[in-house]
Image (cartoon, rainbow, N blue to C red; front, side, top):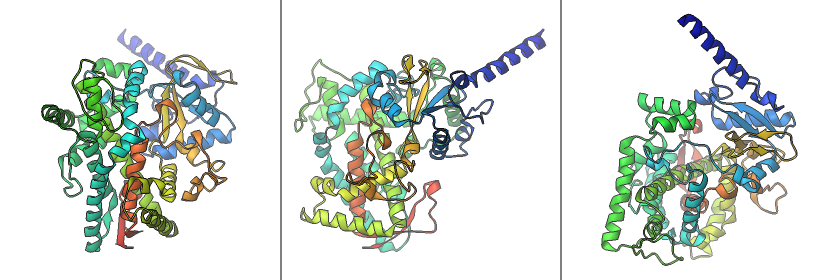
Length: 498
């Protein structure tokens, strides 16, 4: 009897698996045929055999060569609509945003409180938090934090001077990650991390662990479950993604700083001060007014505040350091571009008495173009994931996207499409001059996403990337060292005085 039940169960599973793998065919949507019985089209990604950048480009090229507006993919637990048509992507990200509001990622406010941040939250909770936080990222608020950023840039300049004297190649990704750790730690937590001078500072250690978790058996198991199980199941079992000691570190840092400021009436020009206004007064005040008076209008709990500090830290130090790392890599390969950008930086600073002022950094167009071209070639996210929140009919099509379906907007696909970016493999910052015929705005350039869910900290990220690059490029020349392996995120550069 047990044997019969086992055989029937296996037969049902096999039938269901085959039926599910024809989901897109039944809807007359072109799908990739090389579908693994379990992993779907995600085998190489889940087994870490290929980078997602390359897989997204390959899928994009396949579907576009077949002249379709979208295609179908599979993961072990869900069906994915892979969008090709830029106009449809624009509709999903902007026009019909309410039908695709969520990222579809796992978070758990109870068991994993730091995961309940602006990036992960969904639906009304996300919308309410976004409205509260938007005033904290205005250009005026970012400019307010610039002095703090400049202090870190001054330390970076000293570190680079010592490195250049040693006449030894340096692994720049680590140096730049320590620079952004100091900036974000100071602006988000009000802490002088000092990781540029001390690579083993607590913030650098825990920051690295949160962005690149140690792959212990327990952590690998949790990561595997998060990739293979539906979010509802993960939530039901209360899975915690973050190591407890990492969570404790960040929560305690936030708590101790808040307690100190509130007891001593300390005011600091940083992100934490703005969050304190939200926590204690229910709103962020006008630019220039950083005072906090405790009222009964609280719009944010302590753990909500801690979660936003955490995501600001994680989203700020790793992404910006990677942007600067890839920029230096490309500039080392393209010495003519490096010479040009150094000249532009020094000419731009000369207008402001050679001071690295906020206005000077913002006015150096060539610098921004270098950052933009770097983010085109090395986008922060290869795709923009969205979850369909209600049944949706695709315009000018018979396709109905069912509620709960995952949708991917292919950032890497657009960024490397020769129709939009001629000779896409070439590093060419000039293509971002607005009067350049190759310039392509809107959803064809998506380093920070687009629409209401566009990265809220994009101004801050751009500013610290440009400041870091200007600080080191104005005085030093860089060339690639043989020890470099950009695929393994190792960038060893030879450095000399410019």
